[in-house]
Length: 604
Image 1 (cartoon, rainbow, N blue to C red):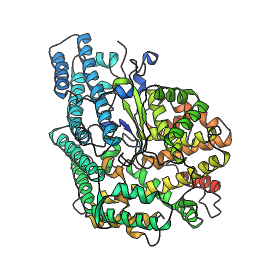
Image 2 (cartoon, rainbow, N blue to C red):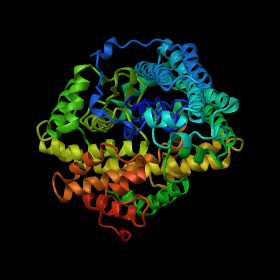
Image 3 (tube, one colour):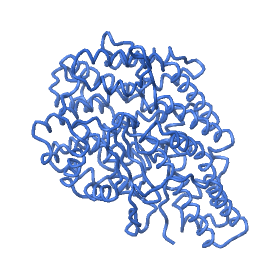
Image 4 (cartoon, helix red, strand yellow):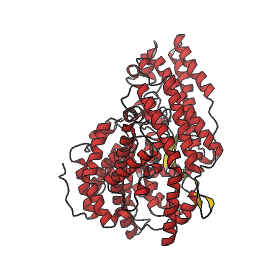
């Protein structure tokens, strides 16, 4: 039989925060692909007949895709049937038939996980989907463990080598040679389930926060939307007061959840044999081929090379935003279609598919999760995009970002070996799309977006590096040493160290950690943004040197011929983000584009 590309629910929700991206992890709550990336072998190299694969073969509209709680008892029985067949000496064909049934079960679980998350995010007040998301995310740890055990049984059986050659992937038996190497046991599964419960508690807190306003209790989200969209100075000051009331009221409840999450994750790391939670997330959840030490060096480079430009941008007023034009959701859709038509290739094909089956939600709502993401519906081999737009032309770049993920998932049938490569495709497409907006925006609007995108890139380096710095230092203290006050102090120090703490607003900046979804749901994810942005900007530099060259490089690496981030960078002929002088090189590009005339470090 032909080797099968199996799906992975870890990282099903593609990438969130900042422009959104985020992934509810399967197994390690919020976690990442690597808890089952080996188990389900989610790599394109396994496909021997890619042409035979088809997206949404039954032509199901998203509106007709129904959520139903997966039959986990049936799934467990199907896994047991595989193990029984192996023990009884069943024929290879029979074992493969039973494995196919398990993979179908897994696809169904993955799909329902994605649908539960989509509907939970569509309206955080919906108690049914909030409960279903908590249930399925909690149950995912057991499912991960079942498949992990089944794969060890397959590899250790008399049919192991035959299954590797005919059903799995090269190196399968070696990868699953010793069951003692498994990260799954009663302790870790219980901790994963506790982690999922805490994430649901976090979502519950941020779903409907209320504050006292003018003598009565009001919805924070409604007030923030009402006051934040007004143009007058009086409303702005009221908005600031409302925001501070929210921070003060929910600082300790959110700190309690976050600290408990750190405690659970630290225990999980110890049980798995990692030296720290950070190392566990890098290896087990995100499958990175660079280390926390590499990440720390990169963050240090951002501080040394880019903070001076950021401070200059603040002094000149550049960093305080760009005046974007209004844009409705209908206009957003039409503009995005025109951009993808202009780019062509996989982008236009993916957009046509998305449009044909209604695989998107781009309507604004104060009750939606304040995020954007791409997720994959395995039963239908169909990506899905979720946006909560702000109503300006900046939404077009947010849409493009998520559509970079969408194109990757569409072209590669959701092969997602590493999140850092996924972020190259999202952030790279943002830059490249600016040359394809001539038919939808005026020259002035495109110039505004181009300038805004470069400012956004600078913000991404600075803020996400600061977030990574905060996160590392918070975990280094240990959850038993932390309090809400210590978290606030670490956040304020990071804001000062990276230059975005405005004088007089210190109390606001010490609470910034409360707003970062990744800290709660996707720990140690944020470093992927600036690291992959470095590579995306190298692609943009190629485009600046010669129109079409950067786009050619983008589509050259899109097929994911290499599994890891650094393999993709190296074989793609690009520079490592961790090379000496890497951040100073990027500083030269950003500084030159924005008109920075201060000193720059020597670029390598």
